[in-house]
Length: 462
Image (cartoon, rainbow, N blue to C red; front, side, top):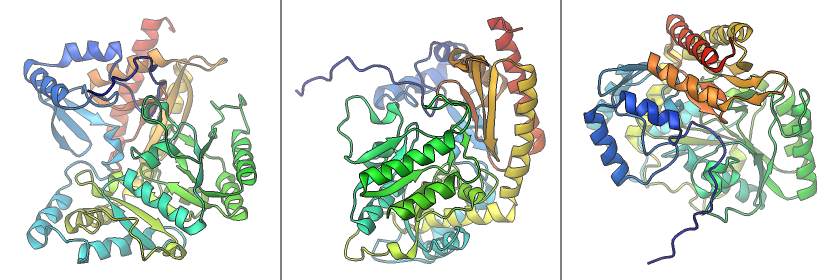
């Protein structure tokens, strides 16, 4: 019998999602779970390893369609979380039909063979990608695609070090969690992680490591350049061009980082797993900043909210490891998953979903700004397209995080039929599907407005 782990590890700080050990979570569970759901949840707990953002699970889902999820009792929730996979909505009829047809035509292709959907998908991604990104590898998830990116950065530069942001999330593999910056995923009893994974504080004027209220982006860019100079042998800087908390970089920031990488022989890798394919109102978030990375990674929504697939898209000059196999995945060119991804991209284009994300997202942002004038709990509103959020504080002058209030708003909103997530403990983060209409957005924002009012009254803000 191996030695048991120490029981001295502390509870991680708030990170990319709300956790399942909140007392309010248990209260909501007790009020909303019937005997059928309870039985399945108990079976789930018995057979799955427990994790703070999954098992024990919140409830049981029986249906997912469009922007809606439905529990076993028939209660419906607008899903403004969706793990960023549901850009085209759940169960899109055109996507389901394409998958069914592909299953009949060709269900699988071993790695040594190619097939039409895989090649067509790669060609489509190259067509859509910014700049001269022209070579592709597929994986079954974003974390694996990040591992591919890290491997090729090392192979190209002959270096192994990286620079990434604290508070970032890049996946669950050891490479991805090593460059990630959230305690929940990289700390505790699993170390040591990869060597050479340097971290810097991220930009964000509302809350940052420097304690400034403006100019954090300049400090961040200067820090990246400084570390590149001091280390001298960094393979890559890797980051989300739009931080999923969310935080938006000011104009010029990414140009400065791009130039610093070029000056010091480091690659720039953009993780667009949550933010790509239209989420921010452009096909790729980095297009807002007119910066082309050396490697761009997409995933999550690429499979249309049905099948898992991700892609690593590289500059052609990174095609240097033909005697090796750094993207060696069994489903590398799976015809079913690549057909799903190709059809998803076609739906996004044909239905004008990038444009809809920009328009409806702008409207939601304006609604939140108006709420901020009436709700003292809201300290800041940030976002772009269908990635936006409101940071709750106990006091606008001190900006002290209102974690408990954010937790209260989350469960009030769930009671009213809106699902979203809290990030960093006190940020209400919304990532709705790109198909969300203005009227549906109004319905969701009305729920937030009502929930904030109820929580403020309960806490004595009114």
